[in-house]
Structure formats: structure tokens, C-alpha cells
Image 1 (spheres, one colour):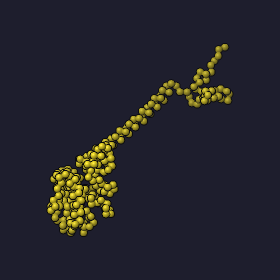
Image 2: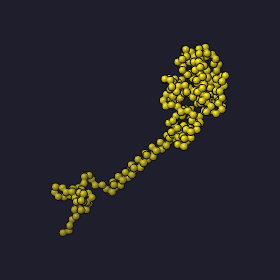
Image 3: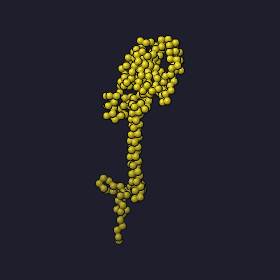
Image 4: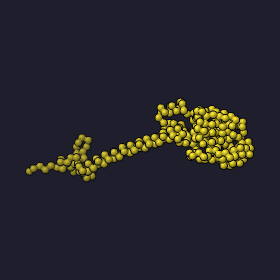
Length: 258
């Protein structure tokens, strides 16, 4: 009589085995089958294909994230360079400079950057895009320096006309002295006319310094048009009349948007 092979002998991979390779047996002494139905070659191939697809999908996601990071870095670098060459308005902050290649940043730090805005209110003021911006705080917070720096962002435009105001001439002198430290460095060729208290820039732009001791002083600017007006220590003015009147002088023929 021929011997009939047992299933576990023909398909040992379908049965449980211990660490030594012996079959794990049932109570009746027969080998115990593995749980679940046996997988066919087709099912194994499908499982392998799914694992491959999942792995490739994860790689694609990593590459997409890398591409998005590169796009974001490129955009920040482009915006910073546009600010530096005055084709885009805005304040170049320390974080902006950090987006540039190290070699470029070192050159700018050593040769071209004459003013670094302080982190906080000064940077917020200079970066603000609103038409009317107020900047308060205790003495030493950089308000006056921000006042003379802000109009420089348009000094490359021939139609730019800025006006910086204080309550009295002695107070105005402090701002003028600060402008002497900065303006000739920021714009080579900028000249200050002492009699008129006006800076003239190579582009043709001007920044004028003046004072308002009384409300009637605003009539000195009757018929004038300015693209930028700044009040330093506006709370020292006697009334709101000067603010309201000079708002009507804030107009420009500059074809470029400000």
C-alpha cells in the first residue's frame, strides 16, 4: 500500500513552527495550521506592489516638501534683493538678510547696510503699509531715528517730496544732526541746504525739515504737495489743526505708487 503524504509534509509553510523548526501541535498531536487563509502568489505580488507604491509615495512627499521649501527660500531671497535695489518697498530686517547666501550677507554687513532697524516697534513702524502710522513709547525707543529713516525708502524717485516736522527749531536741530550722519552714507551725493533745511538727493527727491510752534505756521506749506509727511512728537502740538490741514498737502504727482 502506497504511503500518502500528510498536508504538513507537503506544505510545511502553512503550519506553525517553534524556534527550533518543530511543528507546534494541537491536542491531538497533529501540527497546527497558521491563522488566516493561505496567500496565493498573486496576493503576495499585490502586497509587494502596494508596499512599493507606498514607499514611492513617501519619497514623492519628501521631494514635494523639499521643493516647497526651496520655492519659499527663493521667494524670500528675491523679495530681499528687490528691497535692497529699491524695486520693492519695505524694510530689510535681519531675518531678511539671513535668507541670503552667506557670502552675500557678509558683503552687505561689511559694506552696504548703514542702518539696522531694532526688532520690535521700530521694525513694525518701518514695515507698516498703512497711510497713517503712529509710533509711541518711552524715550530711547528709536522713534526719532525711524522718522528720518522712513522717507529714505522713496529717495530714489525724482517726484518724492517729504516733510519732517517738530514743535520748535531747537528740537528740529536734533533730527537734522541725525540726518547728517545717515543721509550722505545712504545716498552718495545727497546735499543739505542749511537755509531752507532741505536735503536734495541725486534723483531729485527732497526731504524738508520744518517746525510748527503755532497752528498758523501750517500756512507756510499752503500750495505745496508732499508724498510723505512725518510729525515727530505730535503730542506736543497745541491742537489737531496742523494734522488735519497738512493731510490735505499729502498728495503727489509721482507716477509710481507709494
